[in-house]
Image 1 (cartoon, rainbow, N blue to C red):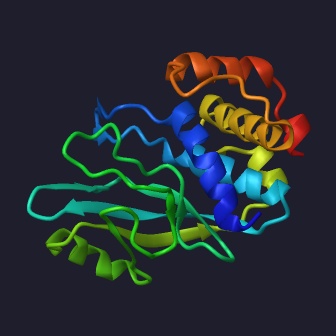
Image 2 (image 1 turned 180 degrees about the vertical axis):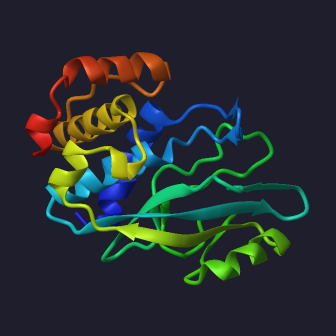
Length: 214
């Protein structure tokens, strides 16, 4: 499988397990993407399959011409991945819970157009403010830092990933489940299974994901 094939096959399952409608927090609106969990699970899966994959942290903005705009604000950031073939590789970004936004037709895998969105990767973070002046339907990525964590570092220490123990454990269980699905085609839930029920099944079935991922 190519890097793209892997991402396309696992993204819908990860989205089902991890993505929720937007919700308010003391710091503002959370888009419900749970990008850190997506990025960590993506990295673990690629690494177990022998693919180099780094986690990148930075800023994102999504703009629908003349209508709506989403952007990470002051104090907020977004995580995604890069592989040798895909930059960016963001399996978390979806607009299916955001009325008025056209959804992406596939995960964000590289800088070609995705559905109605152009994907723009700003190599220099200073270019990011231009996203807020755009008049096209586009998603802008501006990397700030890249993390070359080893597989063992990702499994053992969630702190550099800015994750507490529970979301870290959820990401590990999701990665273990997806690797099992890729090997056995045995699914624990269907597309109409409620998100919380599907996630509970995965956590119950993979209580020790490190045994699979190590």
